[in-house]
Image 1 (cartoon, each protein chain N blue to C red):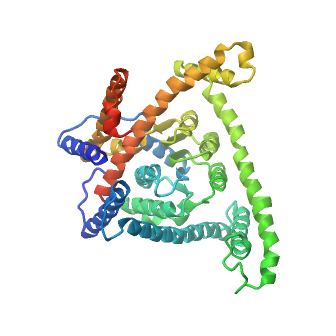
Image 2 (spheres, chains in turn orange, blue):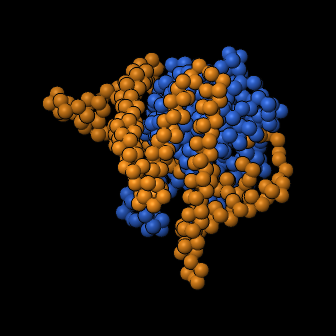
Image 3 (tube, rainbow over the protein chains, first blue to last red):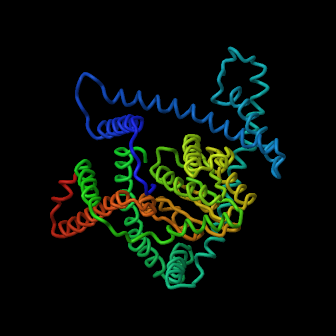
Length: 228
Length: 243
C-alpha cells in the first residue's frame, strides 16, 4: 500500500506463518483427499467450528459499537439524538424478547425463565418481528423500484455514443420482453435474445474471468505476504 | 492444475518485480486524492462502506486495502472519514485500519470511535442506516467499494443527491451497472483487486499486477485453443482440464 518499504518484525513473521499454514491447509484439504490415520477433514471442520465461535463473539462487539455511537449521540444531544433513543430501545427490547420468546430462545422449556414470562413475551416478540421488522424490511426493499426508475432515467440519456448504444440496446430488450412485442413485430424477441446471448454474455464473461483471476492472485498474495 | 497456474502466475510476478513496469492506469483512481482534499476544504466528511459482505469475501478484503489508502489521505488532509459496516468482524478491522491511518499521520487525537460505525447485519436495515447517514451528514465524497447486493442502487442513488463525487467498485455483475450509472468512477471486476497496486508508488506492488494479466492471457489462449479444437471435432483440451 505505502511507498515505503517496511521491515518485517518477529510478530509479523509469526502471523505470516500462521496465515500461510492455515490458508494452504484449507486449500489442500479442499482439493486433495489424503488417506491416513489422522482425519484432516474432521480437523478442518473442527477449526471451522472454532472460527464460527470467534465470529459469533465478534457480533457482540458490533452491538457494543452501535450502543456507544448512539449513546454519545444522546449524551451530546446531537441533532438526531431522538432517533438514537428509538434505535437503542428497539435494539435492546428486540434482544430481550428474542432471548425469551423467539424460536432461538435460550430457555424454551422454561427451566430458568418462568413460563408466565415466556407466555407474556411470545405475542410481543411475534408482533415486533412479523408486524414490524418484516414489514419495514419489505418497505425498504421496495424502495428499490423508485431508485431503479431514477437511475434508468440518468443512464438512458443519449448524450454520448456509448450512452446512445446503451439506450438503443435497453429499449430493444425492454420491447422484446414486453408481451405485446411479438404482436407488433416478431423480430423484437429475436433481437432481445441475440443481445442477451452474445454482447451481454461476452461482456459479463470477460469481467467474470478477470475477477476470478484477480481473486486467485489476490488470495495467494494475502496468504504469502503479511503485513498486507 | 490450480497449483501450477498459481505458481506460474506468481513466478511471473516475481520475475517482473525485477523490472521497472509501466501501468495503463485505472481512470479516476488518481483523482481520489483531489476529491479528499476538496471534501476537507468544504469541511464535509468522506464516506466509505465495504458493503454487506463478510470478512470471508474477496471483495470485502480488496475494499479494506483501498480503505487504508483513503483513510491515510483523509488523515493527512484533515478530512473526516465516516465508515459504515454491515458485518461486526469487518467493523473491527475497519476500525483498526482507520485508527492506524490516523496514528501513522500523527493525528491519533483526531480519531474518534464514531467515525467507524456498525449499522446492521440485516441487508435492508443496513441500507436504511446508510441512507440516513448520507442524508444527514451530507458527505462530499462517497466510496461504495466491496461486496454489494440489492442495496447498492439504494445507497448510490441516495448518495448522488448530496455528494459531489461518488466512487463505486464491486465484482458483482448484477450490481455493476448500478454503480456505473450513479458513480463518477467505478472499479469493474478485477480492477477492484488491482486498485491498490495502481495507487502505490511501490515498484514491487506494481509488479504484482502482472499476475492477473498473465492469468488472463493464459485464459484467452485456452479459450481460443478450446474453440479451435472443438470446431475441429476434438475434445482433447476438455478431457485434459477435466471439464
